[in-house]
Length: 150
Image: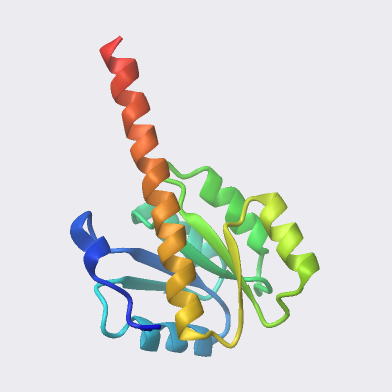
């Protein structure tokens, strides 16, 4: 499988991914995976910088470390649900067991990625999350157009 993210998704604009992690190596690993793509990687080391980026930027996918220094991934999820274009959250953890999967999916995360990151898995998960985000955005736009037409 090709680990290089495809550029075909950029027809609508870049896939903008926010990585929230207090672990600098997480961001470095993602930068390496994204290096030859049109995907844009934003980084935050915790909840408060992430909230500012979520408020100020149109982000489609959020990768959030399970163990944040301040706040929690569920706090991030709460802020995401309050943003107009609701990015899709992918939870990341070194211990991605069945219990975490069940909890994450029940609370509204889209996926769980194990660390250290495997390029193929990262690309696959982000593509699927972006597809979901894009579909939801199109459905919202159609609903608004239909409401305005009636």
